[in-house]
Image 1: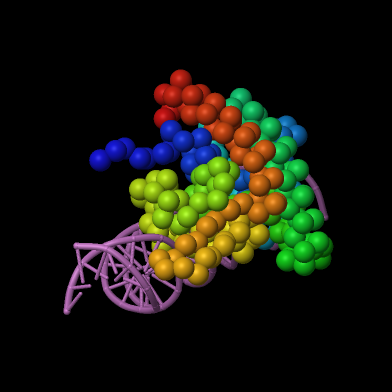
Image 2: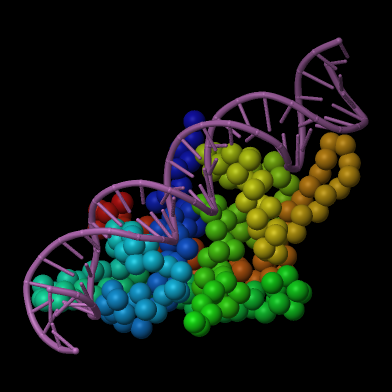
Length: 114
Length: 114
DNA sequence: GATACCAGTATCATTTAGGATACCTGGTAA
DNA sequence: TTACCAGGTATCCTAAATGATACTGGTATC
């Protein structure tokens, strides 16, 4: 039987697995602007995302190598999240996604499907 | 309280919701090549995706307006799936995603993280 | 003394997604 | 008469993702 595990082989399956969840694209989009602290990031996220979920998503993105977590051992604590090298390169996908997403929203509104 | 439901407003959140699941990117990628029948599509999908899941994913993408289902009332039945106008425009995102996905795979291999 | 700050984790409940299996149609070929 | 074809749906079960809530720690302010 032929090997067909596509994670780590197919760019589409791999990307979709790494950019999983409801919020990862939005998080990546915010992180494009540079390093940001946890609470500030949460404030910029939609209100219906809890900090628990944000924490898990960040850990997942970190484990996938897309973002870097830098902790400063101060009181009160300071932690910054930033895109990694490969994470930063994702900006081209985001740019196309933003264009398409806006087209899609407009298209759906025009056709009364939204 | 400010309205913050971002579906239908934010291109990132909207796109991610519409392109949900494990296989949607891969499906869109295959559909780029033109109309295709259900069973042929299933043959091109990874083996660990059942036809039940494929059926559900296709219905979801159809409801989101990305693909069109065309049924020919013959025996045996013939059904073709094809990208819609707005679905076809997603190809630019796919192109960037393919580039980035391959870079990511290479990067992770080089750093022994995959 | 109470509360706020920051950056979380632990635990539990709920929701959503995916997989396994059985079953359907209705004509045709063995 | 049985099996097969394509293209599914129905049902049940499990796994994964998300949400809600409570809690931590040390400082600094009210």
